[in-house]
Image 1 (cartoon, helix red, strand yellow):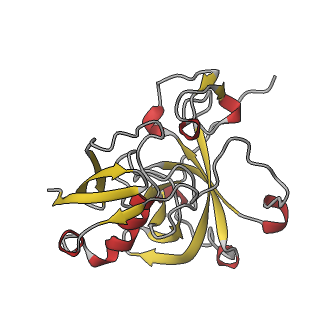
Image 2: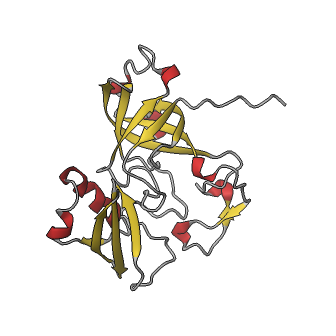
Length: 230
């Protein structure tokens, strides 16, 4: 048996997802949130992104860094099944895996250049927490990567359980205008654990430098407080 190759961290992602609560359950569900994929200094070399803008989407292979050292389980409880039914870990995308690797397809918006970061990728629809380490970046190739007749098992299609979000103009005005649409889209995806249905429960979510508190009754999410984090 050959030895396992060492995985190098080549980049980190930067976005407004400041905590696990609120991060979409899959990539592509919240296209309104943009992220910067910034290479580590040793990989900021001329030509590494040459021709990448010809692809509309890219794959990100990344590390479940928030779960390192927590071990793994042969069976897990997927949120989409209400947190009550167990499936095999390899039939899930649970972070509690023997190798803590995640895989996400994101839309590539553009290659940008920054004085501090050098060339970096601006992407949309990522489901990665701010600061997540990235092992690799690969182009998404439609003829090979898209399988029209594929089945999704127990996974619920994105958008099937979207909520109606009510947020007063006064509360919305407290949020930077450029962040409003992204916040509302994140809330509409229902950040709560799938098994929580208590309409009186108060939830708090940190996003883009704000703490947003809300309740959910049925398919309606009502925001009742927005506070700036300092």
